[in-house]
Length: 124
Image (cartoon, rainbow, N blue to C red; front, side):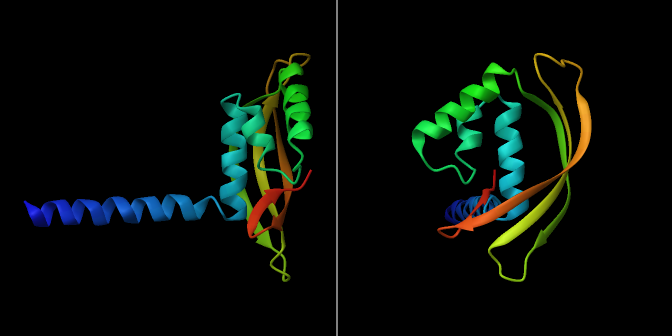
């Protein structure tokens, strides 16, 4: 029984480390960003960007919410980290809609990221 508990704890720790580590890659951050937007968690999504001022985060989140911005699907196509290790571009296939245009529009988008304080952030 004791061995089973040790194995289970080791497994859970490994899963936790893998899942936390993946969100500090450019693709992981973009995935979390669009996941938050898909769930309507605009403030959480905007907090993953280079916008740092709390008032600006709230204002941008309200702008997205007011426009009825929705992400219906997204797929990471590629990731390219610059030689400096501080900038990256993630290409995403994404379907979005707004209140004015409720039919989802699919498009490929290049999302720029910048490393700030050791964390990747979407550069708006």
